[in-house]
Length: 381
Image 1 (cartoon, rainbow, N blue to C red):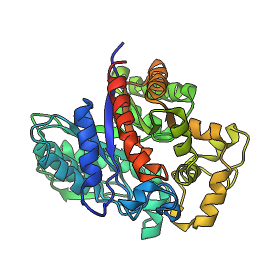
Image 2: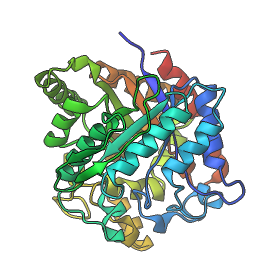
Image 3: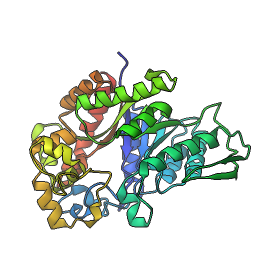
């Protein structure tokens, strides 16, 4: 059985004292623990109510004062490439948005990174979330149809070999469009798709190099969706095993279970649970505070939830739901959970460390050592 590869997520938040603090920390952990890749987050707004991001509730707020102060992802990846010349970390975006960005611009950004990094770029791509589109006047209707057309446009531009191309499209028509950036040694960036619904899963099977779901799901649900992807790949004449089975994981780990539980029960993590779907809440016998049909991360508008509401809603989440939504435990327990996911098809874990969510900054910072143990432990699985 192939070993699981790992990626480390740089939250990409502006920090008070050192502008690239989160990047330095993520890169150090990835390099020291032998990870395969480093990832940037492409967001304007985070997935949890920033109203709880205060020093009273979150220790990390003393270092990064604004929870939504995200650096622009492609600029960060260029910065990472310039500072990673001697390393071999692959560089990915998880995931970029086909609503905010025209696919020609995304194709150019990814191809540029691929060339400048020596062929190490990964284009993580998905339809996006309401929070990063609707508040900025971007049409949020039919995101999957837009996504499909964006993928077709990117692939057409990359295959054009610099010749002008014309292509009809409801969303992204091309008229004598030129894309002259060459491949790197005959390769383009790998396409990793953040897919969850049936239609997106089939697109992933037809076109993606890897599947990178971010929303929590049961082990059997993960396996069933992977089967759907591989069936679609086979129907498209592709080798089903060519689609890597990855997963975006929100990790809560510490040296002891009591500290893990302190983080899980912190105001921020409980507020974070609002981005889980109503279906996941219902699985634990509780109605989602935002309604019984709420879809979760794709539709949440966290910036509209005030502090008192976020705290009250977060308290409604059963602890069992938190263990379901996050990968949580001591390093050994987290490694066991990822090993179990491997048995259901997972071969690549992209991990975001949420230890700094602890209300005490010093405790949160110390959890980085446990996260490094997880990275090293997963590599040995």
